[in-house]
Amino acid sequence: MFRIWARKDAIDQVEYAKIIGPKILRFFETFFDVPYPLPKQVEKSYFLLYKKEKKERKKERKKERKKENEINELTRVIFNFKSLT
Image (cartoon, one colour):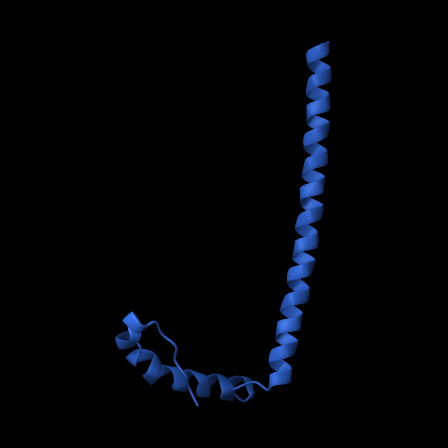
């Protein structure tokens, strides 16, 4: 089964997707030897992995911002010290 979703105003533009989509899916099923659609467990594991990676990226960005803030604060202190002398 191959489904296509489109906005109402773009429904007339899905003909190519209707023709090529199933062919592409069959190619990748053969190439990777993985049936489509993926079992729900696999979809869920991909979702959980994405969620975990997103959380890790968020932690990394928080660490980077903290480090940048520390550097900015140190720069301000140095600048203020130089302006006093």
